[in-house]
Image (cartoon, one colour):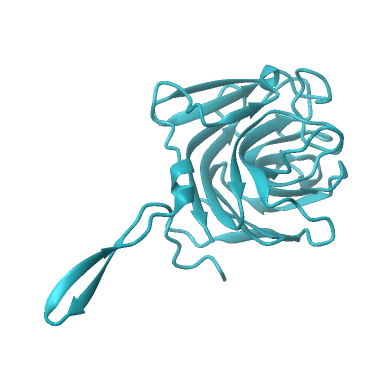
Length: 248
C-alpha cells in the first residue's frame, strides 16, 4: 500500500553530527500545508472558492464547517445540488497543482443532524472530497469520493467513487458501517487513489483507483468539499472537521 507512514502537513527538523557537533538542519515546509484548514475560526477562510453559492448554506464554528444544501434534485439550474452527468452542485475548493495527498475528516447525516442520510430507491445523498477540472464552461470532468447512501446499495452506508469524463459519470463504491470518518485522495500523474477509514488509527480501505490517462485532468485542479442530494427534499448535511494537503 502506498499510504503507510503518512506525514500530513507541518515540518520536521533533521539532525546531522559534524565533528562532534549536532547541527540542526530545518527541512523545507511543504507548500501545500498552507492550504490546510481546521475550520476553527468564526469565518470561512477567504482562500476557499465557492462554486454555485446559491445551492448551499455554509456556516463555521467550533472546528466544524457545516454545509446544508438549499435544493437537491436536478442540479442543473441556479439552486440544485446533484453531482452526476450534466448535473452539478456546490463546491468549496482551493487550487492544487501537481501530485498531492488530501485527507478530509467529515460526518454526513440527515438534515436534522441526528441520523444517517435516509436511504431511498433512486436517491443518492453524499458528502465528500472532490478534484475538478476548473473549466466547467461546457462539460464536467472530475473525480470524487464521498460517504452517504445510494440507491443501488439497499439501505446501507457507502463510500462512493465517481469518475466524470465530459459529463459522463460512472460510479460505484464499497459498503461501510459508519457515517463519520476520513476520506483520502492521492494523485500521481493521472492516477487517482481513493480511500476511507473510520478513525485515524484504522487501516485505510481502498474505495477505488481511477486511471485518467485516456482523458487527462489538468495539472491544476480545484480540490475540496462537496455534498449533494438527488432528491428535492434536501435531507443530507455534511460537517467537515478538518482538511489536510500534502505533496506526493
